[in-house]
Image (tube, rainbow, N blue to C red; front, side, top):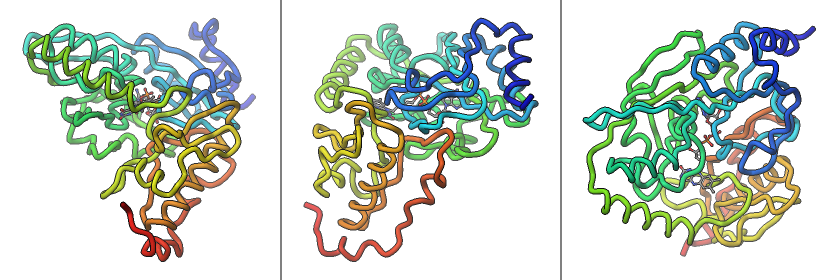
Length: 332
Ligand SMILES: Cc1cc2nc3c(=O)[nH]c(=O)nc-3n(C[C@H](O)[C@H](O)[C@H](O)COP(=O)(O)OP(=O)(O)OC[C@H]3O[C@@H](n4cnc5c(N)ncnc54)[C@H](O)[C@@H]3O)c2cc1C
C-alpha cells in the first residue's frame, strides 16, 4: 500500500468516507474547466476538518493542494498527486469598529457584496472577483485601485510545521499579485490560510452601492465570457500585459482549444476541449513573441499546479537572446 492509499484508509476511518473521492477530475473544479484527476479529493466546511486533513496528509508524506474557487490556476492534464482539499469554510464575524474575521473559504465577491449592503467600506472594488478570500490573500487580488493588502491586518495560518499561528500582514510580504504564500509555490508543504482579519471602515451605503455598480459595469464591459482563469500574466513595470499581447498581434491566436481572447488579450480562453498543454504552449508562444517584439518579459499571474511532465514553467522559457528585435519595434 502506498502513502496515498494509506491516507485514504485513514481518512475513511476518521469519518470522511462518504465525501472522499478518488481520481476526481479537477476540470469540474476550476474556472478554466481544465485539469486531470486528483488522487484524493475532499471538500471541507469546518476549520477543524481542514486542519486535521492537512496534518494527516503531511504526517503521512502526502502532498496537499488547497483549492479555493480554482479561478487562478492551471491544473496539469496529468492531474494532481496527493490530496486536493476544497476549502468551503466560510464563517465570519464583525466587531463594531469594523474588524472583520472571516474564514478563507468565503467567496470574496459574496463577502464584498455583504460589506456594501451592511455599509462597511474597504472591499467594494472586489464585488466581481471570483474565488475565495484565501485565494485572494495568497495572490493579493485586486481591481480598480483596491488590493487585499490594503485591508488585511493578519492571517491565521496552518504552518508547514503543523502549528497554527496568527501572523501580521507584514509577514505576508505582499507585492503586486503576490505574497510570501504564493512564493511558496512548488514547495512540498505550503502554509494554509485558515482565516484572515480585515480592517474595514464605516461608509455611506448608497455611495458604496454606487461604487460597486460602477466597477461591476466596467467589469461586464471588459471581461470576456467563458472558461478562463482571469488575467494570464502580470503587468510589467511599464505596460499592462494585455496591451503588449495585443500590440504583438496575438489577439485571437489559438493553440488547440486555447485562445487569446479577441476581447481582452490578457485573458486566455478555453474555447472548447482545451488541454492544459494547449494553454501552456499558448503562454510560451505569447511570452516568446512579446519578448522578441518588445523585450518585455511576461510573468504568469495564473499558477501552474499539479503533475507537469516538463520542467516548472518559469525555467522553461528563458530570456535568452531575445530583445534585439524589440529595439526595432516601438510600442504605440
Ligand atoms: C473571470 C475572472 C476574473 C478575474 N478577475 C480578477 C481581478 O479583477 N483581480 C484579481 O486579482 N484576480 C482576478 N481573477 C483571478 C482570481 O479570481 C483571483 O486571483 C482569486 O483571488 C483566486 O482565488 P481562488 O480562491 O479561486 O484561488 P485558487 O485559484 O483556488 O488558488 C490560487 C492559489 O491560492 C492557493 N490557495 C487558495 N486558497 C488557499 C488557502 N486557504 N490557503 C493556502 N493557499 C490557498 C491555491 O493553492 C493556489 O496556489 C479573475 C479570475 C476570473 C476567472
